[in-house]
Length: 411
Image 1 (cartoon, rainbow, N blue to C red):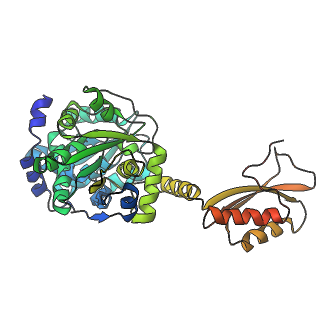
Image 2 (cartoon, rainbow, N blue to C red; image 1 turned 180 degrees about the horizontal axis):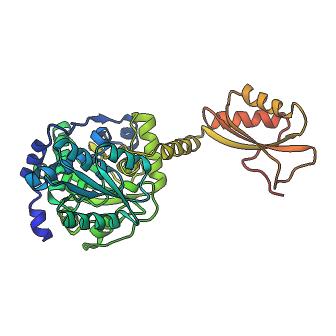
Image 3 (cartoon, one colour; image 1 turned 180 degrees about the vertical axis):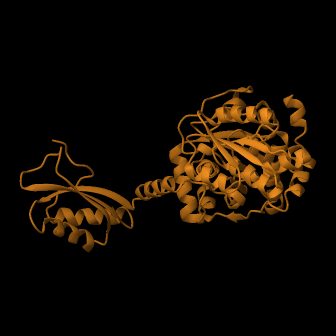
């Protein structure tokens, strides 16, 4: 079965899928990255699919599937997803005037549920994982006569995702390596088929989160290797297993698949926001993480990195930004003891301000730490220009007689 489906993923069908969606899909830009070029020692370009409609590449596959179904989906479509695929199918159905139902895990971000409903879809929340939601959606499809749209285990969907590869060929014909995020493998295999159909010499490398490495493990072993996805910030690509179809395509067309840690992904998101001015979700930033961490060697030749989506939860983005500030030495937490009398705190704050630091938060600590009866503990969260500047602030406090540490001593 998978062999017949794999044979249906061809350059001609990918080109047809592109024509069928030309009225809706945006041609997203390819932008150079001076920072990554310097880090990698090779010319690096970013395919900003995070700027696509609904914020990810998924609209390409959804439109391709609806086009292939034709009149067969007039009764409606149903899909399952934690976010990006849900919004893509909802928009595709809305644009084509087709009813849409979406099954989402009960733990899906509220913002993504609301965004899907805002596109006209009827959302049902189900217990368990995305895999469990897929089973519920398939039952709904068979029971209600709806057409099921799988997020990656479908030749039409994969052909739609492959249209991104056709754009890249036109925008960056000199690329020697293309780096693509991978969950179930639909985008990776579609892009690989589209690009290597025209450029067999091209190297295509997939990237997964370390906590969800099923496709990478399956490619290494040569057989389907289910691996339940663990906790990861890259929830959009946290898939427990590829399908037989995507694995077969990846084995034929993909050169390698590597994994990156959540810390590396978070660093990549900060780099993209700070240097490229692009907001990219964790699953969409794994390619940059792999390049910046040295997991992929560009061999001194031009590299294209796909940024597959930008639908990041604002709370997570704020946490990652704060972590990035700390990692860069621009955010610090200091603890000291001050005299518990009027003016004690004001003196410390004056020293910090005089050294040019910005105070973000101040907390009095009196319980569970070693304090003299006439003193109180103070924890300061401050922003500085650099690690060297932070050292200057600490030196000013110590010169005034304050004992400064990163954490209080517990009594």
